[in-house]
Amino acid sequence: MDEGTRREVARKGGLAVSRNREHMSQIGRKGGLSVSKNKEHMANIGRKGGAASRGHRGGA
Image (cartoon, rainbow, N blue to C red; front, side, top):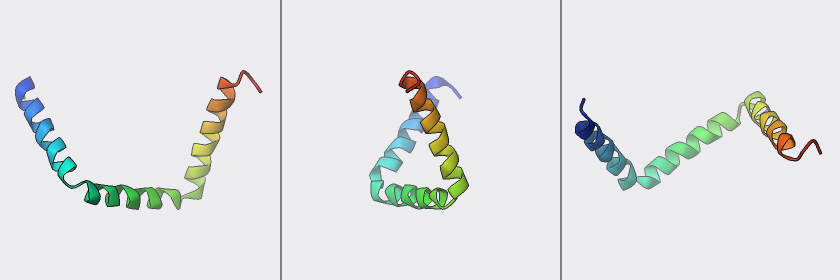
């Protein structure tokens, strides 16, 4: 696929998504709720974030 065709396909996809923001918002919310039910996964995310922010504080 040449560059122009690829850009046109990407543009059309972006327009399709932006026309229905409410629907896309609902999909994202549903996915977020599903992921947040996995307590182990959420704990791992928090642990990684805590470790990263400790590194930025200079060991405090």
